Amino acid sequence: MATAVNYSSQNLESSLDEAFERELARARQGMSEALPHVVAGKPVADGEVFDRFDPVMPGESVSRALAAPAGVVTDAVAAAKETTRIWRNRPYQDRIALLRAAKAEFSGRAAEIAGVISAETGKTRLEAVAEAYEAGDLIEQYCAELERHDGFVTPMRSQAEERNTDVLRPYGVFGVIAPFNFPVALSVNMTAAALVTGNTVVLKPSDKTPWSTALAAEILGGHLPDGVLNVVHGGAATGQALAEADVDGIAFTGSAEVGWSLVRKLGDGPWARPVLAEMGGQNPAIVTASADLDAAAEGIVRSAFGLSGQKCSACRRVVVDGAVHDQLVDKLVERAKRLSVGDPADPTTDLGPVIDDAIAARLDQALATAGRDGTVVTGGRIEGQRGNFFAPAIVTGLPAAHPLTRDELFAPFLTVTRVDGFAAAIAEANAVNYGLSAGIFTTDDTERERFLDEIEAGVVYVNRREGATTGAWPGIQSFCGWKASGSSGKGGLGPWYLPGFCREQSRTIGHP
Image 1: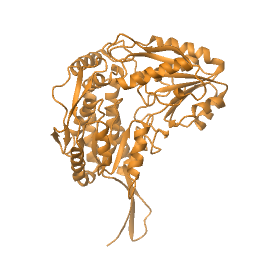
Image 2 (image 1 turned 90 degrees about the vertical axis):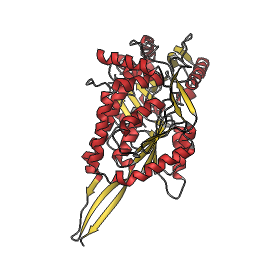
Image 3 (image 1 turned 135 degrees about the vertical axis):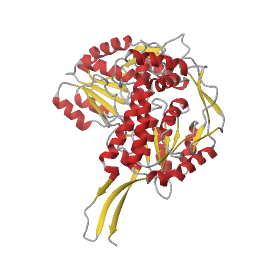
């Protein structure tokens, strides 16, 4: 399918719409056999079966997999170890060619991939199809970066009797722990970066989305030698076993609590092993008195409520000058109320359900707290549905530094904080532990430049109507978290991600 779709797209062409609906219906039929692990290119059927239920129709199993015992994780890491020397010594042009073959398959199977993603996560068609295309663009981004740097081999100044080069070399085996919210794109993001730089991989899908990530691994693995990419399914216990195994590094996307625990675990030993972690955000959009309020309202609503707020870059907080507070709130509420909440199989649906009861329970509690300590202007649980469906919530009037403005909820829940002037807006925007993404709406050049200089976030947007804090795309924006949002100071999707999967070696070779 030739049509390219990204997270700013407004619609799909009719043939892609129809294909998505067929594939979603097929995926919702579920599977009879549990997904096995993949070790050295062979399926391993070991461990207890767990089910993933359709978030639209709880109780209906959409996928099932086996939870890997510790021994399977050990075997998978050993298989990856056995192939490291062959894989890293393969010419980088060959590694790129194999991954680019996989890229073409992601594009060709976009509707199938999107149907599985939607069945497991409740994503709408636009979000699910865009994710399938993003996987292919991520592969291309990293292949192109490796080519641009000539395989990370840099000639150095040499003296008469010697030749000096500086080389970035792979660490060895990377454990990759994938999230549920972008189970294809983010698993491919971490895995492709590790592979193209010459590492081998043991990939653990989220236990909420085993099929989506297994499908991504099947596509990648179909173009790779056995043992280069291995897959182990399961929940927290499998992730812990992987972190405790003989891996040379971890790539992780998920909560700050888990991510920083991995940093500490892999730093505790005779030497520290790298952890490349992206860990969410409590992302602000500043709206100044000079802003175009229609653009601000559109960008904020698109950013806050896509995937029912289950994006680490979603706009969580609006920080608005008191002079335009009431006008902005009215525009936000009007736009939020236009959004249709329902089954992603319906082409008019803008928001599906939140993924499971755990997030729904946190959201119920947050709404109760917001109603007690502030005002829930719009939104809340939609009763009478089988799944956990929530209309987009907008909350105003919370006291300064209220926990609902400080802690990530990961749900369709937006707070609006009134401030007096630009300095107060920047201070409030930065008053959280996270620093993933941030946006501003202003027509004042001085405010724009101060925002770019003072905001504590890695991904920033100015006057972005397509998404106040969201919408990063490979090669267009990088996805780099500051503070508690990232462990490395560099981000995926961009030009500085690949070196994190490598260590530097200086080579001096004398003439014989």
